[in-house]
Image 1 (cartoon, rainbow, N blue to C red):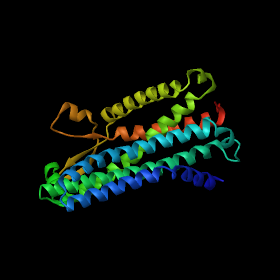
Image 2: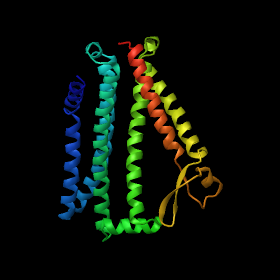
Image 3: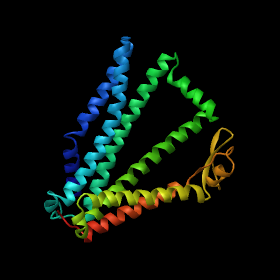
Image 4: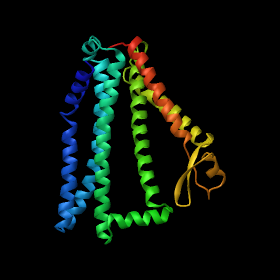
Amino acid sequence: MFSKLMKQEFKAMRRIVPFVYLVTVIMILTSLLTRQLEIEWLSTFLLVMLVLFGLAEILVTYVLVFYRYYKNLYNSEGYLMHTLPVRPSQLLTSKIVSSFIWLLISYTIMVGVVLTIALLVSGDQGLSIGQILDQVMIGAGLTRSAVNGLIVAIFLYLCLSILLLLAQVFFAISLGNHARFHSMGLAAPILFYIGIYFITEIGILAGMVLVPLGITVENQSLRLVPRSMLTTLLNPNEFVFGLGSILFIILAVIALFLGTSRLLNRHTSLR
């Protein structure tokens, strides 16, 4: 049954989202083509449009993901979803997995947009992307292996950020649709999200500054050090990125998803 849930989730999203992705990819190819044809005015216009489409495809994905969660579980489709022979935790898991995959695809396309813009800009300056990367490595004082490790770390952080936002919004929607908050309408989930976001941001900042675990650049490589970002605040010449924020995000994601599962299991109230 869980596989059928996943299939239905992808089937529902593929009606709109892939079309937005396709338009963005076409914009990327068109921008590269017009630059090769040296149509300057059209190339500049398409470059601006490419940036807008890149941001739009991420925004559209987020809006549809959150709307589907609300509509499926707390609105008109909820009466059917909650009668299916599956546990509420499976309903939530199907939403998390499908939403994460769609959002990861949207960010991957955005990376393609950024690389396309970098390629076009570097071409105007007579440089290749490799040469620009070399300049960045020299400026940052990092070796290529360190840069590769940094790219992997950024990717993992992006995945955590996606999960955190999903956890925050799903929990806010679930709590805001509790029977006692129905009189507040859509204001309840919005207000709860603002509160959750504020609390998690404070926790992330506290973990970054106070937890004595960080990463810094030593001898052109990234090194784990038993220091927090407080070191940077006290000594600006020594940069340390506090990894305590990562630990807090992981704990926050787990806690919020568990809280959402509990609300689905015991406090489901449809409009």
